[in-house]
Length: 114
Image (cartoon, rainbow, N blue to C red; front, side):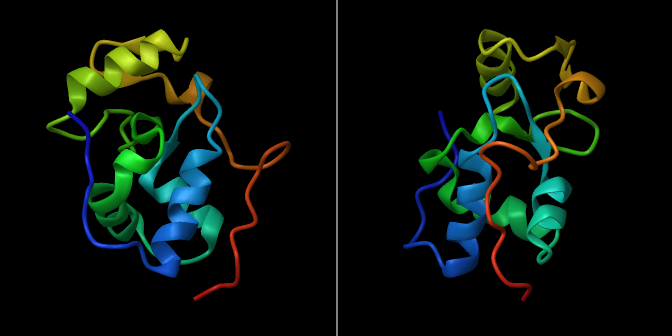
């Protein structure tokens, strides 16, 4: 089961999906990290995009600020992340080890501020 499947993505949604698509296997970003990198939006707006369009990208690589994947995809996300080599303890990702800052090779151009 995967999130998403809404209407065609807006420009903002496409920008969010581009950031998420570039997160390397075994790494994660929080919803807030994605918004911060883009310089616009909030964790909630990123979450809304992921809810509507997440199946288009490696959705499991975006987690809550606690390191916990969102419900109702918790178990599936943890299994996918562990298979990628992401450090998982219990129901959380080890953010200290797995957090990607979105910079460096493969980092997206976040586009203009909103």
